[in-house]
Image (cartoon, rainbow, N blue to C red; front, top):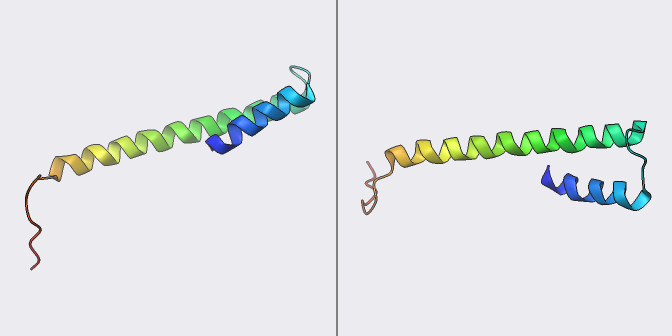
Length: 65
């Protein structure tokens, strides 16, 4: 999703799309939805990392049964 943000912002700036026009609004909605997806992914990653650290035991050999 972050790979969408910068190109779309550059497109808006380069083509000089008027603020609050139909195209500008929909592109901004796209940008914000991608931003929200990125935030949710970040939260999920941090939550997964925290769960993994709860069971992690450093310097312990893995024993196969």
